[in-house]
Length: 158
Length: 363
Image 1 (tube, rainbow over the protein chains, first blue to last red):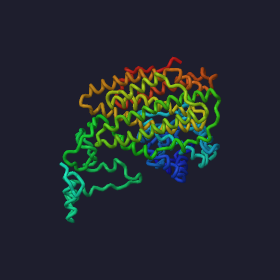
Image 2 (image 1 turned 90 degrees about the horizontal axis):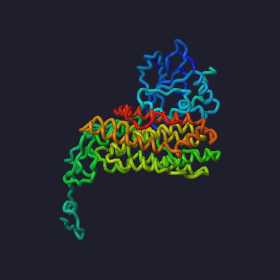
Image 3 (image 1 turned 180 degrees about the horizontal axis):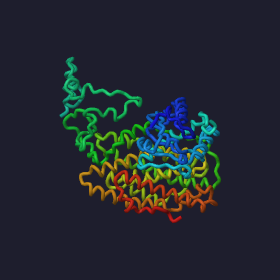
Image 4 (image 1 turned 135 degrees about the vertical axis):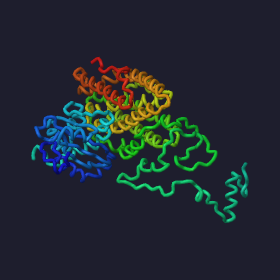
C-alpha cells in the first residue's frame, strides 16, 4: 500500500487523480459539513486495469471529509485495506461518468454513482451487508465528492 | 406530613430548609457529600463532544439490569432514597441495546435535512399523467409506512429505562426522521397535481402487526430489519425509477436516514440474540415474528397498488410496463438479497431457509 504521492499510476481511477479531487473538496468544506458525518473507507477499481497497474484506489472518509487516498497496488493490499465496500467497473464506465460530471457540473440523472450501480454498469460489493449499507447512508456526501470532479482536470484529457 | 412556613404549606424538608435560610444559614450537603467522579474530563475532538466520548469512568458503565424504582435519574448520578418508579418496563440492556446506537444518533443529528427547504420543489416539472399517477401511488404507500416507523419507536421509547439513554436518543432521532419522511412523501403526492392515491388493506394489516408486536425486540426485528430494510432497498431503487431530479433527491435523502434505522435494528437483533438469558427462546421468538412479518410484507408488496406503479415508472409510462417487469423483478430480488445479508449480520442466517419471501416474483 502506498499513499497517493508515491503511487505512480495513471488512468481514470489513479490515486494521483483522486488526490487532486480530494484537494478540490477542501474548497467545499462547508458543503460537506452541511451533509454531516461521513465515516467510511471504500475502494474504487477498474475491472480492466492494465497489467501492472494498481489493483484499486482506497478512499478514507472521516468526520466531514476525505482524509486519505491510498494506492492499493495488489489484491493483498486491497484486502488489507479492508474496505467497507468496493465499487468496480470497466475504465470506460468511470471515464464516461467523469466526463458527464465535467460536462454538466455534476452527474446527470443517469450517471450518479447509485444509478450506475442500480443499472449494473458499476458493481457494488462487500462481504458485510451493513458495511455495504454505508454506501447508502453516506450517498449524498459521496455523490458530492464525485461531482467535484467537475473542478478537476479530467484524466481522459490529461 | 406537610408543615407551614409562614402561610404556605410545604413538605417538611422544604420547610426546614427555608427555616435554615431565614436564619442566614446554608445547607451545602449536596456540595460537600455527593459521590461524584470529580476530576473526570473529556477532551473535545474535531467532532465536538460525542455521547460516546463522555462514557468515561463509572458514567460509561451501562448496567446489564436496571432497577425500575429510580425515576428518571441519569446514569451515574447519586440517587436519593425512595425515588418513584415511572413504570419503565424495558429494564434490561439486552432488550434494547445496540453497540452503534450512540454513534448513529450523533450521525443522525449531523445529517438532518428539511423537507420544506432542502428539496428543490420549484424545479419539479410536469410529468405525463401515467407517470404522475404512479409516483403518487408510490408516495401514498410510503407516507403510510413512515407513520409506523415514527409511531413504533415512540410507542416503546418511554418504556426504556433511562440508563439506556443512548437508545432513547437514537429512537428520538428516528421519530423526527420518519416525521420528515411522511411529510416529504405527502408533499410529493400533492405538490404536482396528482394527490394521494389508494391505501391498501394489506399494507395496513402489516402496519398493525408491527405496532402490536408483543415485545420491543420482536417489533424492532419486524420493522427495523425486515420492513425498513426492504424500504431501504426500495428508496435506493427510487433513484432509478424517479423521473425528475426532485424525485431522485427525495429518495436519496430518505435512503440515507433509513440506512441508519436498519443499522440500529440489525445490531440490536444481534445483541439481543447474543445476550438474552434464554438464547433458544429468543431465537424462536425472533424467527416467529420474522416468518409472520415476511408473509405480511409479501402481501403488502404483492399487490397491484405496489408493483404496477413501479413498472410504470421503470418503464417510462404505462406502455412500457411489460418491458419494465425485469427491472421491477430485479428490485424485488435486491430487497430479498439484502434482507438475507442483514439477517446474516444479525446472526439469524436460518432465515435463508425459513424465509417466506420468494426470491423472485412471477414476472
